[in-house]
Every structure is written in C-alpha cells, then in structure tokens.
Image 1: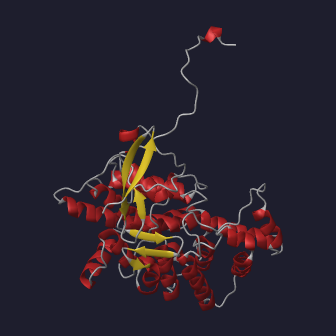
Image 2: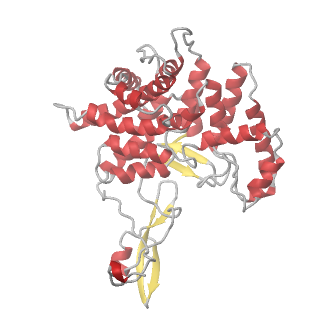
Image 3: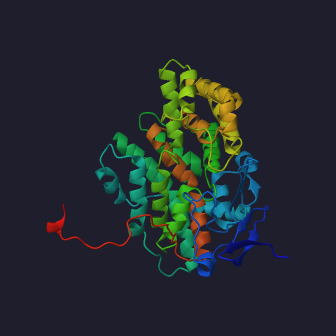
Length: 429
C-alpha cells in the first residue's frame, strides 16, 4: 500500500506520496504542492531537499557509507584504477578488459590539446589562479572541438566525454608548466592516465622525471575518492546549468567555478594552510582549539565536519593510510602530518567536537598526500576538479537522459517592499 503524507490547510486535507530509494531513503514527493495548495517549501541551502533521483552514488552520512554504482569506495580505492572508476561512473558498469583497453586507448588518442590553445594560456596574467584558467579553457574547448560530423549521437557523446577527461588533465599540467615559464611536456602513449599527468607536471630536460609506482597509485586513490559525491555544490551547479540544455563544456565549467570555493574544492588547500599556521605558531594546538570553539571568532578548524557525514568520512580513513604509505616510501617526515595526527587525536576525544560531529573529512589528509607528490598549493583545487570530472559527466548525462527533465527554476519567498509608486527625481529628498 502506498504511503502518503497529509497536509491540513484551512480545513482541507492534501495527500502527497512518499517515495523510497534502493537503500531505504524516503522522501515526500511535493512536485504538485504549489499546484494543489498554493504553497511552496522554504529550505535555505537545500539540506532537506532532493533535487533528483539518481542511480550513480549512494551516501549514508550517519553510517559513513559511500558507494559508486553500488560498489563500496573502499573496494574501488584498493582494487580499481581511476580510469576504470571513471568508466564505471559514466557507463554504470565495470568495463570488461576489452572495454577498458578501448577506453584507455581513446584517452591517449584525445590527450593532445590544440596548439592554438597555448596562446590562451600564455596570455593569462601570471598571477591568475589555476581554477580560473581551467574554467575558461574548458569553456573554450567547445570552440576548438565543435560537434562531430557523420557520427551517431552516442558516438559523439562518447568522444566528448573522453576528450574532456583526457584534455583537462593535459591542460592542467600545461598551465602549471607555462606558469613557471618552462617547456610544456606532451603526453606519452606508453603511460597510464595518472602516470602521464605526473610526468607532464614534473618532467624536465635537465631532470627527467622518474615514474614512482607508489605515487601513481596514490594519485589513483586520490582521484577515485574525489570522483563523485552525490549532489554536492559543484555537482548541483553542473545539473542546474545543464538543465538549460547548454553544452557539456559550459556545464563542466560551471562546476569548476563552484568547486573553486574554499568551503568546497579549496578546502584541502585551506587545511594545509591552517596546519602551516599552527606550525608557524610553535605547534601548540590549544590556542587554535579554543578559537575554533569560540563562536565570536571567525577561525575554523578546516578539514573537520561535513554537511552529510555525521561520523568519520570513509574517504578520510583511506586518505590517512595513503599519506602514511607515501611518506614511508619516501623515507621522509612531514611535520604537517604530525600536527594533523595530534589534532585528530584531540578532536576525536574532545566533547565539543564529538557533540558537533566534527570528524575528519577527506580534505584533512588529502593535502598532505598532494604535498608529498610535489603538487604546489595553488594546484590543489585543480587536482580535485580533475578527480571530480567523471562524476560531473555522469550526473550531466543522467539529467539529460531523464524523461522527466525540466529546466531548474527554484522559487523564493519575497520579503521586500510592498507595491509603491515611482517618485520623480526632483521630488526625492
């Protein structure tokens, strides 16, 4: 029997159905609410609002669960590659060996960037933030790579997805090299997706880059953990902009802009900057913990707490192990990791942090891993963006394929001036 929720308004009863997801999530279907009652809901920042049905990613914040297409994130991080995970997200199933080989070949075939695009990179101010550059360049891809002629729609979409995944990685490395005034390193056909990126970032005529399998694996893990995360700020932006039926490049560019914020994709950079601030102050934690508890102090402990997770972020556990593994392999110590471990230990036992569900999230350790790879601080959000691409693409594709698609158009409650007459300029006081 279908369950419903009743709303009683002015003596009349209205019923709205309850829908249930695969994992038992329940929602009140209010799509006819305004039509039947004249009311809308008010839910600032949408913490209680479902914007869509999706079969891509499942999260349970209370139990600390994250799955892509039903597969636990722990299994993917341990056994999969970023390329395979991207295929899973976009296509819905893990690829066969033949499908994975074809996908990998396509990524290599589309990895070069049109030479004319280098002029765009070179004309950006040297101090421009890499995320601003990346957003602009992704938008520009549409002009350099318009619709494909004599291809089926499915083939065209397939190539567009692959082109984005491959070229964004190349463009990110290219922008870094140009910012240093160094020679651009081109992708190599004999390297995997992650190895190719590291080589394009760090290879040099005077010091050839040596591929370290452990760093390649760490980058695979980093990008897998960031590949999708349900209806977060940037994914919601991709879906919202995409609902106007703009091209994929424009929708992804919007996602990059949303990810740029320090409370989203810039959070891992903010964590490292916070740890450096603690280190510069002598490494004493108590003053910073006291400031974090003070409601009148704008200081925040970055990397703790999450809008969805009310327990330990499952990605943070994996990222923590990866940080230890990478630093142990390099036989080096990072004082920031030592501060992070002490900070986590205190926070997990402090009643204030426990009561407010302020557990470490993925950003808390991911910056330390990127530092160990040699990634510069201002490139941290770009690394997040590359990892999130498969999720954005799959979410855009799902929304485009949705037969119930409508352009996104939230409502509002107007609280401004009531109707009043125009006052001519000479009569104004």
